[in-house]
Length: 395
Image 1: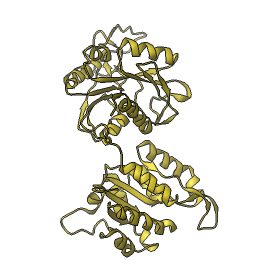
Image 2: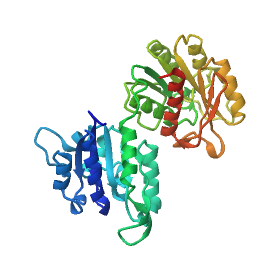
Image 3: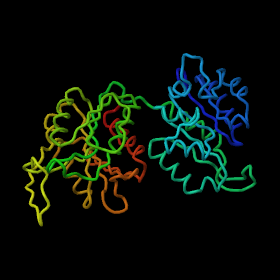
Image 4: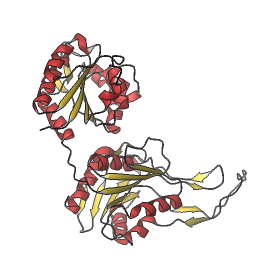
């Protein structure tokens, strides 16, 4: 089932460490190349020899133990799936905060592969706000988690904290390793983030877009086999590893970049929050403080309308950030911009998507269909959006 797939499976220190042996054996039986790494604590619960016998490969335990030809944590990071089974509160805290003081934590920081954590710990440790914050952060960054089960724990407590069943872990691994390559052969152009419009050398006009939604879409499209071009305004987060990242500042720069890349693209997803207006004049020197200031604003080019007018066979998906009348405004934009699909999201109240790790999208289709999605992480919302696009393109 997993021919040609490499899995880095890391075992951390907990009583559930012995259960990782079944997962290693199952992966090998299904023709995956399994490289096992173990923390020092994990080796106190199960021996590296056991894992070496089951995987058929040397087990990695020390970040400094190399053959002079490779760097252990970098080799471990180069994989199709990076799984931590079981995942202690400690390793998730390290991963969430970017620590890299041992082989496993350093490899987590270095990997660009999909990440999977299967937590197992005492119920009080699991429910601790710090642990929950770390889990939520890792999920927001794109990691997958197999929730622990409830029951009798090794320490004698009863509650949530048992490692999930092998069947659940196997199902999650299968889903992650066998991701459909439905966008293979397609070039996807994604715009993300805000644009900023200079007032003077110091000040500018901007909006609250974080870029997280557009980045999630670009990452998901890449995982699904597409060649991805990401055009991004200024953000505070690192862009995903895609084929081409083009950084811009203003709406005019974004327009220029989009038009330059358009001819090579099959699918365009305009998730950026492009400024509608810019100052008519940019002051050459810093404007000094006065009792009042009058700014004359002029309209920026409508990039989405411009590319839709020359769309040809391209699929174009737009976004609409709305504070009110979401349905009415979305349907109007879908029609006026000649779009194939429009994703609308609320940016006011409890569902405000700006800066959040979650989003509640409503998809509006050209044929009148409306698909309202539940509130979910932006990574999951990105895949739901791409599912809809692939469905329309019959990919």
